[in-house]
Image (cartoon, rainbow, N blue to C red; front, side, top):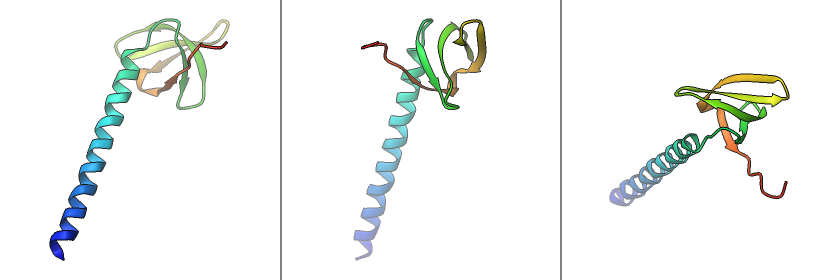
Amino acid sequence: MDFLLFAVLGVMILLLVSQSRKRKKDASNLLDTLAVGSNVILYAGIKGTVVSVNEEDLEIETTPGTKLRVVKQSVRAIESTEGK
C-alpha cells in the first residue's frame, strides 16, 4: 500500500517538473523570436509594436509617437498579423 502511494507521488512530481521545463522552454523560445516590427502583448495588457531590441530590454511603440522601454520578460505573447 505504501509503495503505491510513493509511486503516485513520484509520478506527480515528474509531471510537475516536466511541465515547468516546458513552460521555461516556451518562454525562452518566445523571447528568442522577438524582432523589430513584431506586435506584442505585455503581461500588463499593453499592446505595441517592437521598435528596438537590446540584450535585456526592448522598446515598443504603443501609439504613434509613444514609446515604452520594457524588460523582455514582460512580453506575454506575440500577436499574429495573419488576417489583419
